[in-house]
Image (tube, rainbow over all chains, first blue to last red):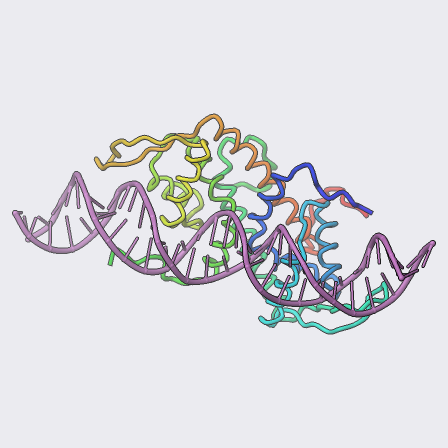
Length: 132
Length: 132
DNA sequence: CTCACTCCCATAGATTGTCTAGGGAAGCAC
DNA sequence: GTGCTTCCCTAGACAATCTATGGGAGTGAG
């Protein structure tokens, strides 16, 4: 299902590609907190969880996984997928969980910082706390 | 040493550098909606508005400004700064405002998408009817 | 006047992380 | 067998940031 690969908004795509920079590893680590997964399913998980907005290409995904493994944030082992195919299953390590926590915090702070610049006169605002 | 840059070498910086990719032009355009500015003051404005979290280096800023000018999203003219120095003042064009609107929308949607992936099990959940 | 400092602009090259575009193996339906 | 899907991998292209450097010009201290 969900074969709708946003074809119309190619502009959005290329913009998203730039924006993705730096968040991919965080997304992968987060996905692995749900369960161990192989690369292909990680990509699917991210795509589906973002309603098809975030498409991770294989050329980005696998190098990222190798990077994470090299850094000791995930561990890998070969196994068989639900479709009876050879697959490399990744699991997040405790160092990876720590990194995830850090990266998530940095991301949230970054978003807040950007919004601080972008905010004036946006006029559309959820009232969350917002205390000066 | 006037040449001392950001030597604090904190992790946040290098992470932020990656994350910044793709948002810089939006930040610049937004800054210029306040008033016309020269490059140096744009960088200061962004840094101050983000409480010092977003540091735009000159090596990123000026190429970005030239890019924006080439694309017709800002226009430039030489003038004198408040400090009586030669300065190139940038002004956002109507095409630039349109771009800003687009880029801002893409950014907000992107953040929402990322958060959709990052959110599950944060234990702090806004009830936003996200059922299976 | 000279010196140190800040303000302001600019560019070349390194770095990094994404994508594009290829390749391949192996299961399943027909 | 053929064709489609699932799954893995890598090399090179590309884009946007930073580092490092260069310089000009105004200001204030001495």
